[in-house]
Image (cartoon, rainbow over all chains, first blue to last red):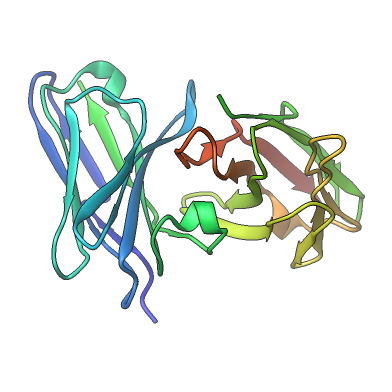
Length: 117
Length: 114
């Protein structure tokens, strides 16, 4: 079956702009989480959604936001982009709620590479 | 808060050598522990996991045992292949102060030469 799909794969934005990234989870998965990966900070958790509700949020400023739709697809938005937002943004999906807590398998997409200039 | 410490990389080995990547953690409660692998140009894949003390996770010849007494989850493989070249991430998540934010190590790059 199809894996986690993220679009776009690559994008370049200018400081001050905003960006929206999209994630389609594996069919039947209702939990979607987002991560930021950078060489300096490693992999950091942004937020998780389950059944259109945000279940948990990492330590990122309010410029980072997300949402989940009734079909489980998710988007994340970053407003007022800064150079430091350049990163690989990974989406992951899993079957149940709070999957990391329960030890469920989480499937990652290939990510969206964002470059801010 | 919770934290995961992995050995610095890159780790460079010849094919068929024995691999150990160290991982230690700090957490309250009893977290689940994971190893993820990221092949060049791809997303993260779950390699193996363990959900309680003394559990051994295994997959594709890799193994890791949940050691509560030493708060460790070291990754091992008896004979590595060139195709194992990737970045490996140790991670944990579990009840911690009411939250369950997954915490990752910084990753260890493995390079295997023929």
